[in-house]
Length: 192
Ligand code: AMP
Image 1 (cartoon, rainbow, N blue to C red):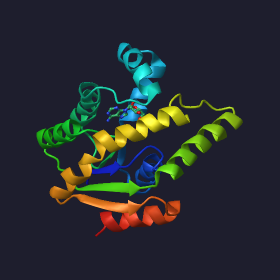
Image 2: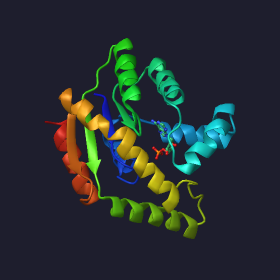
Image 3: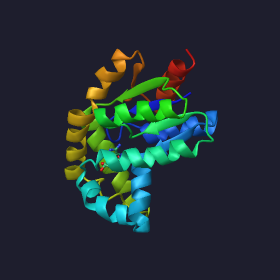
């Protein structure tokens, strides 16, 4: 089973993906994690995307589609969780084509709905907690970049709701609920 977790920054996609990995043996594909790894290791691509990411803007479709293509072509896994991908209609079309090429389908697209002010609060807290614990703070976890990330979500990514609704794949969960409740709502969708 292959699924997309859709939702704005701070919605809890990474947290819920980690639970699905642990409990169902699914494989999480987070383009954000892949891009941060490229940035940290200082590859050419990492250097090119660093400033764009730090500002909270989207990197090009070609780059992220390329990253996902590599993972899908490597094969070996049944059950991907796409986390933070696709973020544009072009990426969504590309994902459909890539899955078809490797003989797989997309089974569910689950959106985590969270109010904007709660997102700002969560992200600012995440940065403060990391700072207090002496851990690295994400360069885009500040209020200004977050506002840009939110705007990008509503403008570029939220059209995917209609796109996947029309394909009969879309469900939504209340991302404002407690973590375990969100988990239960996701499980109910996957096991229906
Ligand atoms: P995330 O960890 O998903 O919040 O992603 C962090 C940043 O990486 C985003 O703000 C974008 O700059 C970039 N990014 C991650 N995934 C994508 C994607 N699918 N399309 C474009 N940019 C992305």
